[in-house]
Length: 369
Image 1: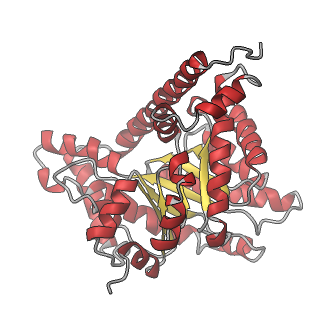
Image 2: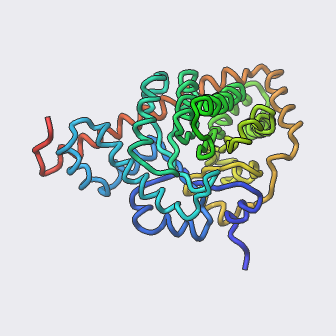
Image 3: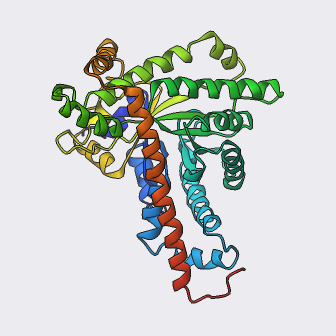
């Protein structure tokens, strides 16, 4: 009998997480089966995922009615709904929780705080305290204003998933924020051996934007190559940073590396294989968080093999060619960051509106004023 293809990925040192969450998945027993049968090792959520879950089902309606008696603020209601789901998911992942890469479930701060350092720190701390699980990660965006929030959260002992990360220079700044946070925590006299973090590189969106430019400039041969080249370069940075003397000093005190996580790994261009961003990026000490349909596609027809370390020179050459063609990858990643924030703000606002509408339809009218 052939081994499950998703489980085979784990043999190459990569953890597969699910980039999806809803109450039905958790309470129907399906998530438990995915953990047991596919060896699923973690889970990520974001505002768009919660918007689909809450707007598209009645699974949350009863709790919304109950919470509406306690809270008038729809954002407060949303986070109570989310925390319920996150806690139940973290408990299901308890048996695979290692304290390093496995068993984590991520909950994101409000996307409206992407450019507000102090409020991000405040909300990250509040969510961490409320979820009250060792295997939760709080997602903080890799914006310029997010970097000091990441450093502070790590110093406070919070597990952090850095989200909306597109550029290599910004990735280096993210690793510095992580190491600085650990150094700050040590200087404050606190242990650093219980803190985990991942840096989530968003990939398919890079190709969606760059491929249009390549078509316009007459270089279709590079289509679908740039995101993977960026990921391979990021992996080389990861290996350098986490074998450095600076990290080794922290490692002696129990620090763990901040693993790279491949995100946005569902294929958006139908001309590419639906397993493209999974197959190409299998490698040790990494994580890939995949949408449910990509997970199912990979189980059916993936080709597990360690490829992340293959052709690092070719990856560098691809990015060098991009520059010669006249495409500035820094401008691309800056645009993607701005668009990424907007792509989360919109569903977040729709989510709060859906809660408002569900409250209005509720038979209970004694909402707190």
